[in-house]
Structures are given as structure tokens and as C-alpha cells.
Length: 248
Image (cartoon, rainbow, N blue to C red; front, side, top):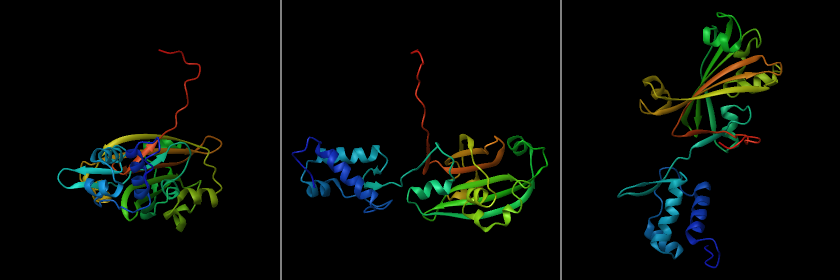
């Protein structure tokens, strides 16, 4: 209910209430929102007040307006904070999402030059390679690959738990300590192969994140590379302040 005696503008009250309804699942992605006339009647406010509220929803990414058709609920972007080491699945589950991993491939391979450099081993060193498709609410959103040294994690690919979480297996079964990691985030577009995997159009925007994780002795433990749909996934970073910096 609106409080017309509140110092908070009516459109902001409506915006807050509509956001709460969206988060509670009253309106599902792709569903048409009530029209301006319907909202005017429901809240007893002017068309301008309703438009300001809807404009606010659109700016915050909750809805999209389609000329001549109305306002529709958008699929919200999933945001991962780059402040701690967590797996793709772990991060999404903390946001209340239903996450599924499908194992596409597991194999023993020889380290190519790129993997050898990142893991600090000679080229040709035996590695384990794990490839999985990541789904959220049944929709494919990411394609992930992991490389680790076979000598460090013997029989890793025989563990059933790697389908859901490789990190849980590394820590629980092998006692690995994931002390720090470096990540490189790159933009790319979907090739025909990636488009087929992720059920998107060829040329659609993607985010590629390459992580190298290190132990407490600063030795590399694993390489992970995940390619996610840029329309559904984003990364958030916390940056430190500029103490002691002179203004420029």
C-alpha cells in the first residue's frame, strides 16, 4: 500500500513494491507486466507516476519495453563478485539459483605450452582435463574447463563428485589449500560451436574468464576457464581506495 503522507515519492514506493513482487516471483521472465492503465487503477495515481516507476524498473534491468506490446519481465543478470575464490556453481547457489553441471568430457592429456606455462611444468606433462556444461534453472549459461596435474591429484577424474564441484574434491579428498588466484576476463563472441552448446545465436556476446589458482606455497594448482553468456552473467569487483594518492 502507498503512504501518501510519506516523504518518499509515490513512484519510488511503487517501484519498490514492484521490485519486491518481481523478486518474489509474482511475475516470471518473459511475462507481460500490468499495463499503465491497470497500475494507475491499482495504485490510484497518475500516468506520469506509473511511467516513472516503470522507467526505474527498466533502468535497473528488471523489465524491457516493447513498442506497441507492453512491458515484459527480463531475465536478471547473475552477478559474481571477484573478491574470494569460489566455484561458478557455489556462487550461483548462494544466490538461490538452481544450478546443474553436466560432465561433457574427462581425460588424461599432455600439457600444451599454454597449460605448461600456467602450471609451471614442462610441456607434455600428464594433466587431467575436465569439461562441463553449466545450467541455471535448466538453461545453459556456461561452458567450463579445468586442467590439473595428474601427479598432484592422482585418480581425480575417477571421483564422481567432480561433476558438481572440483574444488570440493581438491580440498576434501586431496587436502589442497586454495590460497589465492589470478583471473583474466575477456570479451568474445559465440562461434558456431559455442552457440550450439549454449543455445544462443552465432556472434552473441560472451565472457571468457581464465583463472589460475595457487596454494599456500604459491604453487599453481589448477587452471579453470569458463565461457559464460554475457546477456545473463556479469562480474563485480571490489576496488581499494586511493589513500596517499595526490590528485591529478
